[in-house]
Length: 270
Image 1: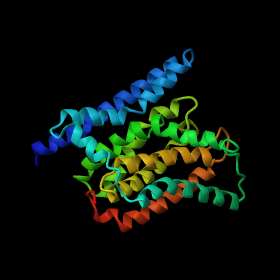
Image 2: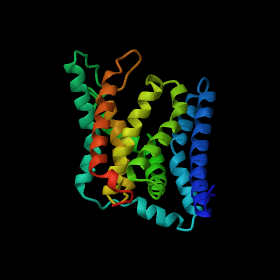
Image 3: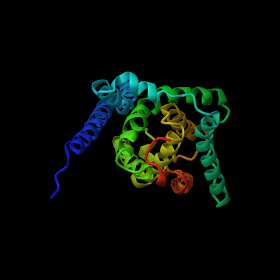
């Protein structure tokens, strides 16, 4: 039997170490948040915010310890000079998918729940800023797309790298399914995994098309989380799962298209 080479062992160890730091930090913070939630709500909120920075923290730590250094990592990740077309796609694509999903939901006899942003548009704009800063994008994308995705694409096609990352990204969220008040608590785990993996393929497509811009990934992540507050596709308590399910099917339809057109032939940043 062939033994793995030293490079293969080093590659696997690097990915394992990354996941160990990212998951360890986030899951420990979420565990502590759940423990203190009954008597210290503010502390639980702060711990929840800190938990979201696990993926980016792991990327920064390993980049600082690696041969390229933190400066090279940040210089590549913070690439923002890309066509405004890609900014527009990253920002508006989630809104279009959610709007279409709600339209199909209504057309099939469903009822439209009130939007949390209705009559509070200034708050909706502020929500985009809050989501960007503390709602996941900054805490996750330097890790998932800035660090992990390029390394997965060194060994796998862009499509398979996206699927693997989508699974890892989904599993990272698991503690939130047992945390009161989270979106995940209202969703079936399998449906969330399908949604996140489809999103992962779209993230990779935009990331590669913009030369590895984590900034674009941050815009897309912010748009996904923020537009969901404007377009009420997420179930609330006993609300129907149909809009979220339709949105997931739409995301997979888009993921299949970009996979056939772009990702199957590409395993490196374009």
